[in-house]
Length: 169
Image (cartoon, rainbow, N blue to C red; front, side, top):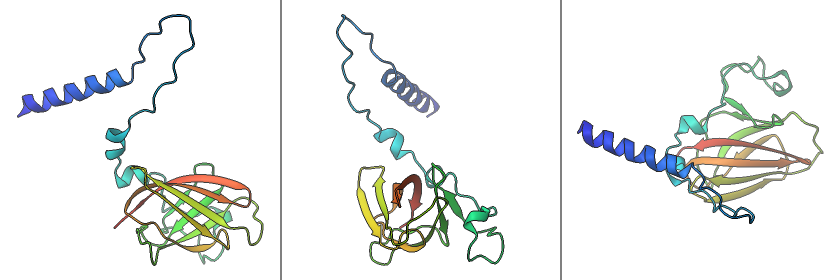
């Protein structure tokens, strides 16, 4: 059994090493545009913990505390990759295309009143979902159609941020 596991591991490492090595260039012409990388193996290995990296239960930043009677410690939240938008999660995000999951969006950046927040999601297998929240950042019901790790692009009031969240079933 150990021999089989060792052989399988060695084969996978060899395959991955070969995929990461560029072939030598020949001739004086321009380099060919590489094909899109195949990432099915890597994407399948993403766990909810990997996807939710960055979620904190520490104190909310001062700019995100409106409506909280304390510093918000204990409430799960995640700051977008660019630091412009925070998702405050009152429960683990749940995939529900009808009722959605409650997320409070708090913008760190200036917002125009009545400017919508557009959420464009791509699940790691390529499935997409888009939702527009007409009232912009604030309380919302995010309607993601299926469970999994979703890469969200968030656009509001001329700003854009991104974050990944795991939506349960």
